[in-house]
Image (tube, rainbow, N blue to C red):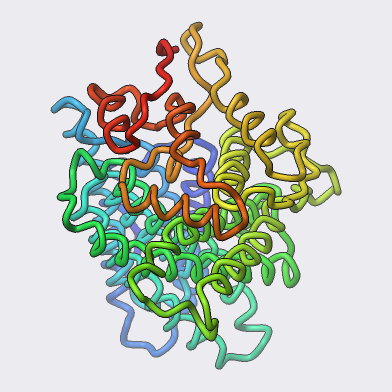
Length: 455
């Protein structure tokens, strides 16, 4: 055991990665692999020997932090990168794969629950390819992680309360991350399809893709609910931590991201609901009609949004604002809800933007949110950029989806109007910068789009 990392060395590397003082590299992954080879030599015992009992949870944490560090080096939109950048990205992806494979072969893996984070990062790395094959591999990896999580949970539930408590906490905390990532993949798959339909997909396959998306989103929304329930358990049984440590992973923001991702999935389901109805598919669950299903989805959206609105409070009772990216996501959720459920009441106590004051999501609220998202803001290079875009239905170019959104609006007693909004707010299209995009959108909408100078 002379070359094996001590518990203190494992702990130190985890903290260094978390604080950005260390970046995952080939040497670190090789060290993890070598240590796990040593761990396996002891696997003649039913339970981990004393000298590994402290190391195993820390090794799980190191695998979690290493893969997360590597993932941060992988940019989105890989198809637009040059060969040198692509080679560097592939090197980081390979590190994540190696770490995930090491986690698969780890002895007594149920004592190192945080190592499941490697599967989450592997799935997210595949998603960042932004290809159909990449998304398929991501979903398979998500299923692997969920299966292993269930096995570990079953093992610890059979143990004495005092023994199992820290392990169940770790599994609940990592479940929040696993479920968040899986729901996110379902949303990204759908957003890519409806946003790049005209460029990448044959028009005759709209029905097939719409049904596949709806089924994946249904699963994703259910898994998102699991993440919220897991976050509730962590909060109630252990409390959140102000900083990730050996004791805890879940931060005071742990409700917001799963709430946002679950809401995204539910909104996309609403957007596709009229298409599903037109195909003669049965309503969800025990609902008799699609109108009942739409209202149930609306109620589930309200439930997810309640988590988004929960205060971010540290251990001293001090409240904090959501970070900038979460503020954008909150407005995007509210705008999508306004476009799908005209006049819906969605109260908010947040005051970071004037548009948040609109409790009723009517046309005035829509224009206020659009103005805020399209507003010029300073960028990191001293210039200006548009604050954000609206992915999902705000960038839709799939004809059947656009028809379905208009029908959904009518089902909630609104007027169709979505095509007009889409043409008027072309600036919020996530792909507005792409060559020929405006012409393709005009063709799908049968309306001229309002073009603006790029910021």
